[in-house]
Image (tube, rainbow, N blue to C red; front, side, top):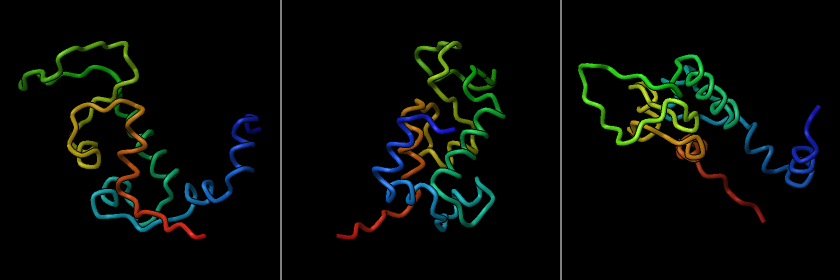
Length: 117
């Protein structure tokens, strides 16, 4: 059962929903990460989110052979994703990304939608 706000968003903006679920050809960097040549925006975001959760990238990890480049570290802050090399390849090489930035950074890999009158 969908929450009331989500139902309203879907009925008010069917084109926006279609943009999230339509399959799109992926560029090579994202294709390598996802393992598919086509995926929807939503499917791609879900794969990235699953990767973050599976690899515990919201928790503090530190490789002792490399100096910490992060100024303030809060291991309880789940709003920050600590990117590994594979994730950096699709998130503009950033070492850390806030959760609110994640959809916008993923969206950069998708072609712009043409607006029809």
